[in-house]
Image (cartoon, rainbow over the protein chains, first blue to last red):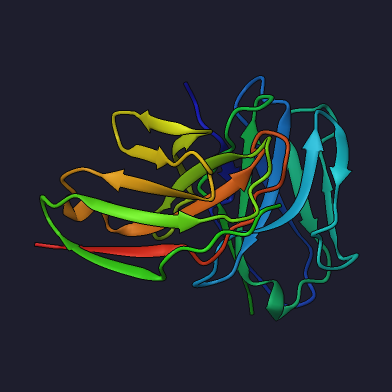
Length: 112
Length: 110
């Protein structure tokens, strides 16, 4: 079946612009996670949804970062007033109950 | 969440068996051990998960001793396409955030 998809795959934003990154999880997956991966590092947790409820947002680096999953399926990660340090790959993962998390291909964000 | 320690890098040749060991001394009773593989410009790919003893699938085997304080990912007869970063993680992966380290960079040469 279809895996996790993310769009866009690449995004270039000028400093100060707002961006929205989309994640389509595997159908039926209850849990959805966002991670940020800097070059040469492992992914770092940003936030977690169970259905439409955002249960953990402890990893969001600032109040410029906002995530939503209003209907319990598609999720959007929004970054307001982007800064150069926001440049990274943003990964989305989904899982069903206790199953492993399955990752999408990521969105590479470059802030110029 | 238990911390894991694994080698930063490993080198191998095509056709060899590669074993990557991960230590997780503080693993909790409910924790599973999960390995992911990541190629450049791709998201991590689930390889294998286990709780105890041995698990085998079409890609790899996972060996877990009785005390569960370490685990070994075994890749049989590696090929060039197995060159990637391999991450070992412990936790209740379905519901918990994953805590990645820097992983093990495996380089397979001809």
